[in-house]
Image (cartoon, rainbow, N blue to C red; front, side, top):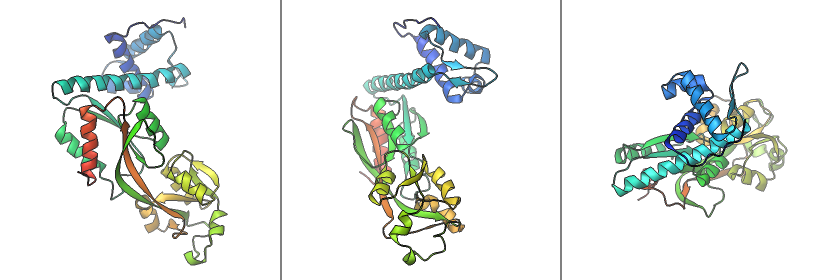
Length: 306
């Protein structure tokens, strides 16, 4: 496709980018039809117009299915940042008029809803009461993706386990989570009394750990547990435990139903465990909009803060 110079962004460009964002997130033009409430032929024409405008091919579509090109993925990421910046601008204009409108994109770490210390749902209730005109998008993402997304402006607020701090982010303590090391019912250690299981036996087990920087990774290193398999969320670790071939950490609240069914059990509880703090994160600069600041205050209030 012949390269094009974009020049100034206009309303038409922004409208085309919004259509492309929905298509990318829906996984295809047909799937985006309901979300956009316009016909497939119109959506296809909009995507084609955007490709001509940008001078790149954004996606492949045909019998083999839908997929973003490398350039399409880059444009999608840039589109998320642009839309985030536009939402911040609208929120700042609304602040001038003392009305809270606009849009907040929230990213959460997985498997927190069953934690009795987690009150994100209460925070959402408080925020809806305080700012009913502000709309929300809520994602569940890995820790590193949440951090990167907040730094880049794709997410305005994140909720993550504490592990290391960045000077570009502000942090607020919310709740805690207890992590135990588990094995499955078919694992050789499952039927042994915990007092008979030595640290060396546990360290010799095949360990399933998370594949990004996190408390899980730090604790694994401290306890000399080398990963035999890498997982990227706790659901994956649960599946690996149920295979009977691995040991791995899970939150106690998430593991409880599996424990009650006799499918997994905690081992090495005196040494092989840790308590994890969860934090909200937001960018220090630019200054959070009034809507984002209100949402952060609702998170703090819901979790027992001022």
